[in-house]
Length: 281
Image (cartoon, rainbow, N blue to C red; front, side, top):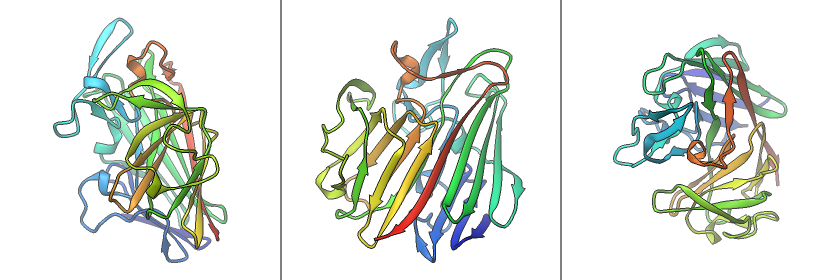
């Protein structure tokens, strides 16, 4: 475990657990859902990185550059490949100071047929936590690419979420997007809405403006992101958390004719910056 502190913030990193965040606290209070002691699954963490793609790829297969790419089905009996490769690999600590650190993950081509280098840079300050996630193509040819972060915020049925987006994508039985509808399809989030009113949601919001608020009454948590085209919202029923995931592409974008995603030339890099701050109510 790597621990950082600064400006009233405390951050614990778990490099061996997929480069995950173990906990994030501000003045002694949890800002992200803390990881249980002894956890071995990144899905139990406070936040984990999504590289070299975000969310899911239908059937673990897609075509690129005239060839079919088959990925491992990496989530039990789930029919799709999920969340990329980095969350199930250990990350190396390449820099560590009192209030900042960098983790790195190098992939040599097993499972995902391109070599890449990913880094997460963490910093604490008066403005809160900043996480900079980058992905660089280390192969000799172009690589399809996507990145994101998967934070878990504490939530109760009374917690209010607020964000703006152009539209939301509905999904089929495989949880793969099929068509887009108005952003208020599951309720109007633009002025804030209670989590308990929404029901189950596991959908991507396209055209997100890069800002979201998680209002718990006594305090507000502010999530902002740069370089994220979309926001994936996961509201499981009966749980004490919600996930607002800044991502660079929609689920299964590599398989869509109209899919928007990055194609990295050799040596090229994409970057996403996520910031989390706290305001008292």
